[in-house]
Length: 257
Image 1: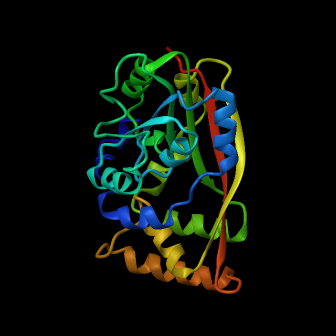
Image 2: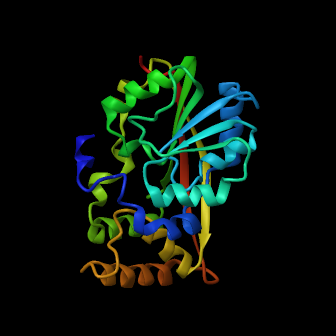
């Protein structure tokens, strides 16, 4: 995971917060129901949401009644979560990184990371997760993985590979079996859920620009990317919208200690 050293993963979303809040997909409610049941979450449970960003993954745990430590090093993203969730009684905003959460030893029932784990520095994060979890505590890692097999999905993928700044290097699909085997004790579950967004062109553009690998205004790839996105949208839209399909993948188990 050392390839994340440049640019700094804790700051690279700072100029994308507004798009992130408005256009990033949420997670299926069924996933949190499964987490509630499998991890035995109750109103007495404590969750550490690492790399919690703008609170997309934090909010559903709060709705389950849990106390949630939203651990986020990026000031702008953390401020967005605080604005959104600050009045929730179980919400605890923590200005820290996944590798050094500042949380007490053996203090949480579940460690979660939604759309974030591939940014962590693996060895340090693994040790920190083991430190803060209670005995028999669980680790939940989950991602919305865009389906790439459909005509739209394949064209969108090709566009990102052509115009994205460092798309291939930072793709969360890089978290494979070898890394998961290092992080989890034997016996982890892999559970998949269907998810999707229906987006008009401005929303699809905002969804794209919320990604860290989308070239910003002024970058030589920005205008070609926007033009290609418009062509892609025109080719695949129905009634002025396209459907972006995801497979939401959850890994759940006890961490390696």
